[in-house]
Image (cartoon, rainbow, N blue to C red; front, side, top):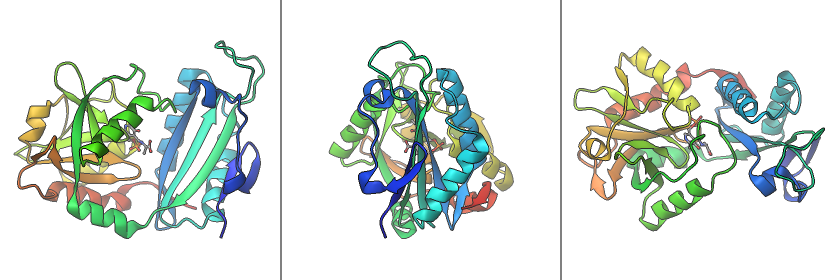
Length: 286
Ligand code: PDD
């Protein structure tokens, strides 16, 4: 079955889907995006993702490409046309197509692309059983990483560095040695007394939707959350570490820069968060 993409008002064969060479997303990374998990036929946390899309668009003064209700219909339609039961749906909005000029163009319509992709849940579960390895890299991104912009080159380079070191994620570290977040995920540790620690979202990270929903999950499980800075050395000594994102949920981290975390196996707190996540998250039928 051929994959289908939504591009500026039309559903087209994924293989033939194109945007214009003067799309400002292509020329200036002048656009934003969202990724929602699709699990068991449901789009997970769509409302929170669209709220964040609204915020990202607002921060960059890009208009919604259509009414939010219409956008939800497109998202569902792309998931359905691609028969995605488990996987993800990707949406991107750029400022649109205009002759190359740094200034915002007048009267340009935002450009929109929505795609969906199947992901084998057994592969993801297998990875969660093994855990992932992370490496640390110095923060070198701009200071508006709270906006989910498509300008991701530092993230690309950091994740390549991780791959070269046999790891699956890179953690950006600030000049004080504190962990910020991953190349495409938020970073967490579990202290010896079982508290969850993650950096405050106001300080140089993206406010992850999975992170927000994990606060709800932790409350249900009676786990304490400390929203505070943590250093790389504290993380190395932690009881557990994990990352969160729409595509990984809570994914155990078993080594940081080659140092095993605790016994080098996924931690029980992380796995319990992972297990409880789907039941507690908001779910919209695709
Ligand atoms: N990335 N931090 C960064 C830099 C991210 O790119 C992401 C998500 C997150 C986690 O956010 P959320 O829980 O809302 O997915 C944190 C997506 C998955 C991506 O770029 O593919």
